Length: 287
Image (cartoon, rainbow, N blue to C red; front, top):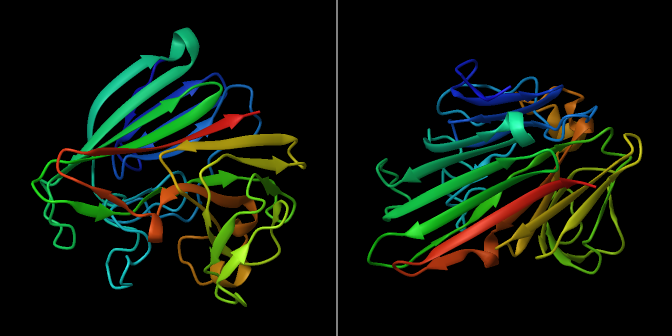
């Protein structure tokens, strides 16, 4: 069937493709459901305890991090990860060929009409989400519409559904340097050796421009996470102790998700001159 506009729990667009499911909210231009036809398990993960309310972040799916990462370069900016994931974006276009080929394209726009004191610049941001039977692609395009340069951080904070975080691995990061931001990290500057495996809290920012492959042997699934316009790959899982302190995460939900994020953060923040545009794009492909 074709897409439908939904309002519960938030306004957005959904489509059912056989037993498959696509979904995106206007709140944050937030893709939250991607399960292609024929897939037994969803590709995107969404917390059962997430708060679905205007002005509140959504735990899961693909939050849009812009114009700063975390608390920003000086560690004092609020809200965490910027305002884009909390604002309601303008849905500017829909291309629906779901019945013909299983594809749904949804485009959003966000501009400086809303006053944000910590980012007082003239800009336009576009987000294009492409839902297809083979892949989900999300692109974030930012243009400097003003007369002075500005610098911003951005990321597509993608939550991927997995069988068990302790059973999966990530390939493609071998040899990359990374910043270890986990609370119990013994050293900050590290180098990846071999595939990434998970045995505790993981919060890493990799200097990495290539693709990552997620191997999930329990589900018999491999996902390729590729990207363009990105110099940072962020990998995150809170593990049990931090999860227990997070009100929008169930006590055991940490076992079923991993974040693999395309971004430009910290030293890889983007500076745009007047009239310039930067595009960050991430694609999740079922192999």
